[in-house]
Length: 440
Ligand code: UDX
Image 1 (cartoon, rainbow, N blue to C red):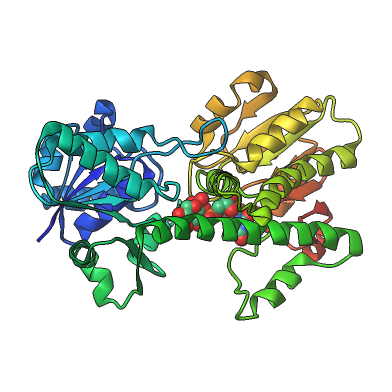
Image 2 (cartoon, helix red, strand yellow):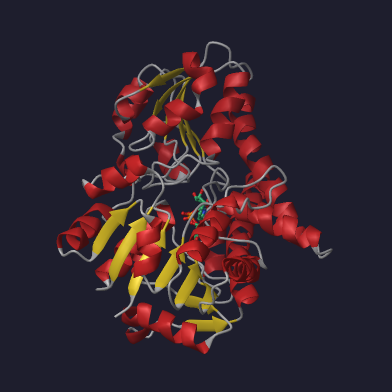
């Protein structure tokens, strides 16, 4: 049985390590952040991801999952090493690879036999080969000769559904030049292989571009329906029916056709920018992706404009905001549409009462400069009390079952901006709300 090391205990690394140990493999997760590792050893999960705590607890108990800051120990004892560190955007939008090379450098220092080095981090095309050359050069400098293979194995995990996505993938992509490495990877994912999950075996560069192309396509699909939603508002059509009918076409598919306030999160904004940069770098512009990035920014601003247009004047207006995270089931606010919307409305003079079931701590950090304009509330009803309008930004399930009578009587005026189309316009108007959804 293969021994696995996962370097980086962020979102991807921790989910990968926990799920692989749940597949019965022996896994050690490594991070240079000692505080994080100590927390994990005590069973404290540093991110919000439903059921991850149970999986970690179970596998730590059965001694299949361990945590360490000792990368030397991890490299020496594993035969498959996953690199799952962050690749934050650099100034120009390209991915910053310093953490990936830090890990590669450690692997080159401590390698003691054949290793499969698996890139899980989202990295620009060519990084797999560059990491291979980098380690090879270091080994030459050390005057040692160890065999290793670099594999690209991109992740397609959605925050909030990461455990499900890891255990029920649509496909596993394995990019490698080496049959030996591919066979080992199939063994690592044996549980999924036996479940007849499709495996796409391909070159390293192809695997790298698959990740960017998939995410950019999904971002484009969302942006497309968001723009159709804006047009629907102008022509008196209902985008919900448009999405439903479009989605019934097997060539289009129903997923990622839900209009909203604009996509956010740690992947789509970063990956679309990185792919656009790669296109430019190789003189092969991906104009649809460039247009998607701009259209998404425009769409978020449109959400600000809708409120401004309704009120005309926002000075002395208090807006109740439900949902701050970039989507439900996460505390992540990275590139969340709520940031653009709240900051835009704050500039126009509004102040806010806000509530999110998970992202309140994050929000306090994000909105540091405008804290005097924000009141953090305990629940939905506390949030709307005395406010001039309600704006739903994140589609948490608990917002789908609001006591609308109570909401209406608590608001100063029954103005309801539903930026996730949780409710239907006709229904809300019957209930006496002045209702504005997206494309309804
Ligand atoms: C995404 C990809 O789905 C995943 O495969 C990848 O590996 C990581 O990036 P994630 O960012 O966690 O996952 O969330 P996702 O569910 O894809 O949503 C991204 C953004 O798009 C969110 O802001 C979400 O609210 C928005 N979205 C999604 C819509 O506005 N409409 C939709 O129909 C779907």
